[in-house]
Image (cartoon, rainbow, N blue to C red; front, side, top):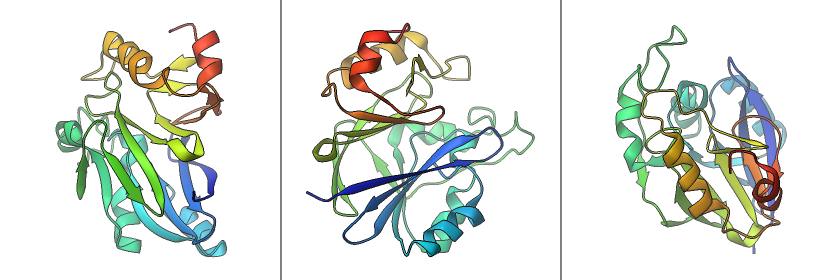
Length: 209
């Protein structure tokens, strides 16, 4: 089993959690949701001798995807996103970049499916499709490391907003109950905003669930 180190950086206009998921043995690194501050991320990557292997997008909202293309170009690495997120990527209205006065579209290289197992940077990773915040929102689960990257699906004591285009509270709650709360209770959850939590804590105390 590859040892996983999770490095968290607050990026972009509204403070998105960007994660560097580091294989401590090889320094191969997955960059999750680089929604801004690509130069800052690059400084930290260089300072620690990391080797970027991929960009994972949990979804294609502006605050998560804004600098994905810059990171891809800098390191010549692929961008992963769920196949149902294509419309979000193509539409500045749906990806809310227009709302922030920065209308733009996004692209990806690898489109993943629900339940798909990936092997990236030496990690086995399961894709969990959790629509509700966006149509193609996903969480990335590292079963051997008991780690979940939850994007804007599940937060510490809360869930993602569903009042953006394509959002659905019923879909989101169903997604979380069926896909996430069945994971081991000691699974550490790293959300797109706010602080980390665990599956057990959210199962017991999250008022939305």
